[in-house]
Length: 100
View 1 (cartoon, rainbow, N blue to C red):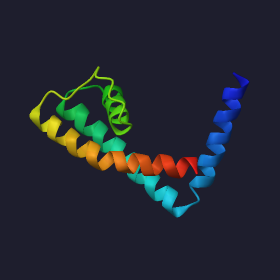
View 2 (view 1 turned 180 degrees about the vertical axis):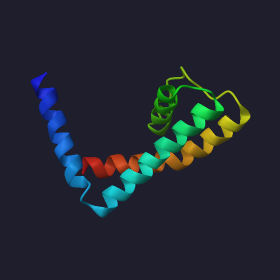
View 3 (view 1 turned 180 degrees about the horizontal axis):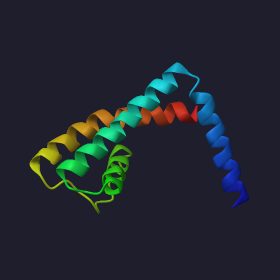
View 4 (view 1 turned 30 degrees about the vertical axis):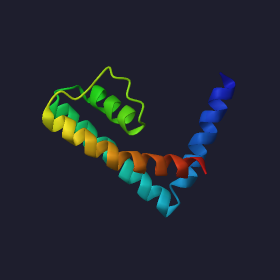
Protein backbone atom coordinates (compact mmCIF):
# COMPACT_ATOMS: atom_id res chain seq x y z
CA UNK A 1 0.00 0.00 0.00
CA UNK A 2 2.75 2.53 0.78
CA UNK A 3 4.40 1.91 -2.59
CA UNK A 4 1.08 2.58 -4.33
CA UNK A 5 0.65 5.84 -2.45
CA UNK A 6 4.20 6.92 -3.28
CA UNK A 7 3.65 6.10 -6.94
CA UNK A 8 0.38 8.01 -6.93
CA UNK A 9 2.08 10.99 -5.30
CA UNK A 10 4.88 10.96 -7.90
CA UNK A 11 2.28 10.76 -10.68
CA UNK A 12 0.35 13.72 -9.28
CA UNK A 13 3.55 15.79 -8.95
CA UNK A 14 4.52 14.97 -12.55
CA UNK A 15 1.01 15.79 -13.73
CA UNK A 16 1.11 19.13 -11.93
CA UNK A 17 4.49 19.94 -13.52
CA UNK A 18 3.08 18.88 -16.88
CA UNK A 19 0.30 21.46 -16.63
CA UNK A 20 2.98 24.14 -16.90
CA UNK A 21 3.89 22.84 -20.37
CA UNK A 22 1.74 24.36 -23.12
CA UNK A 23 1.58 21.23 -25.29
CA UNK A 24 0.69 19.03 -22.30
CA UNK A 25 -2.03 21.45 -21.25
CA UNK A 26 -3.49 21.54 -24.75
CA UNK A 27 -3.58 17.74 -24.99
CA UNK A 28 -5.10 17.51 -21.52
CA UNK A 29 -7.90 19.95 -22.39
CA UNK A 30 -8.63 18.24 -25.72
CA UNK A 31 -8.70 14.85 -23.98
CA UNK A 32 -10.94 16.22 -21.24
CA UNK A 33 -13.22 17.72 -23.91
CA UNK A 34 -13.43 14.33 -25.62
CA UNK A 35 -14.43 12.66 -22.38
CA UNK A 36 -17.07 15.30 -21.65
CA UNK A 37 -18.51 15.21 -25.18
CA UNK A 38 -18.66 11.40 -25.17
CA UNK A 39 -20.24 11.36 -21.73
CA UNK A 40 -22.89 13.94 -22.69
CA UNK A 41 -23.65 12.18 -25.97
CA UNK A 42 -24.01 8.68 -24.55
CA UNK A 43 -26.00 9.78 -21.53
CA UNK A 44 -28.45 11.74 -23.67
CA UNK A 45 -28.76 9.44 -26.72
CA UNK A 46 -28.37 6.04 -25.05
CA UNK A 47 -30.04 7.05 -21.80
CA UNK A 48 -27.11 5.79 -19.72
CA UNK A 49 -26.22 7.27 -16.36
CA UNK A 50 -23.40 9.81 -16.37
CA UNK A 51 -21.10 7.28 -14.71
CA UNK A 52 -21.89 4.58 -17.29
CA UNK A 53 -21.42 7.07 -20.14
CA UNK A 54 -18.07 8.25 -18.74
CA UNK A 55 -16.99 4.64 -18.19
CA UNK A 56 -17.86 3.74 -21.79
CA UNK A 57 -16.04 6.85 -23.07
CA UNK A 58 -12.87 5.95 -21.18
CA UNK A 59 -12.80 2.28 -22.18
CA UNK A 60 -13.56 3.24 -25.78
CA UNK A 61 -10.75 5.80 -25.99
CA UNK A 62 -8.36 3.39 -24.28
CA UNK A 63 -9.42 0.76 -26.86
CA UNK A 64 -10.23 -1.73 -24.09
CA UNK A 65 -13.86 -2.38 -25.02
CA UNK A 66 -15.10 -4.80 -22.36
CA UNK A 67 -18.42 -5.23 -24.14
CA UNK A 68 -20.62 -4.79 -21.08
CA UNK A 69 -22.02 -1.57 -22.57
CA UNK A 70 -22.45 -1.01 -26.27
CA UNK A 71 -24.23 1.50 -28.52
CA UNK A 72 -27.70 0.38 -29.53
CA UNK A 73 -28.92 3.12 -31.89
CA UNK A 74 -27.60 3.77 -35.40
CA UNK A 75 -26.68 7.35 -34.40
CA UNK A 76 -24.66 6.07 -31.44
CA UNK A 77 -22.87 3.53 -33.61
CA UNK A 78 -21.89 6.22 -36.13
CA UNK A 79 -20.78 8.57 -33.36
CA UNK A 80 -18.72 5.78 -31.77
CA UNK A 81 -16.90 5.07 -35.02
CA UNK A 82 -15.80 8.69 -35.35
CA UNK A 83 -15.19 8.97 -31.60
CA UNK A 84 -12.72 6.08 -31.74
CA UNK A 85 -10.94 7.33 -34.86
CA UNK A 86 -10.47 10.83 -33.47
CA UNK A 87 -10.08 9.96 -29.82
CA UNK A 88 -7.63 7.06 -29.96
CA UNK A 89 -4.89 9.21 -31.47
CA UNK A 90 -5.45 11.99 -28.97
CA UNK A 91 -5.50 9.48 -26.11
CA UNK A 92 -2.19 7.95 -27.23
CA UNK A 93 -0.61 11.40 -27.65
CA UNK A 94 -1.76 12.43 -24.17
CA UNK A 95 -0.56 9.21 -22.50
CA UNK A 96 2.76 9.52 -24.32
CA UNK A 97 3.17 13.07 -23.08
CA UNK A 98 2.29 12.00 -19.52
CA UNK A 99 4.85 9.20 -19.49
CA UNK A 100 7.75 11.16 -20.97
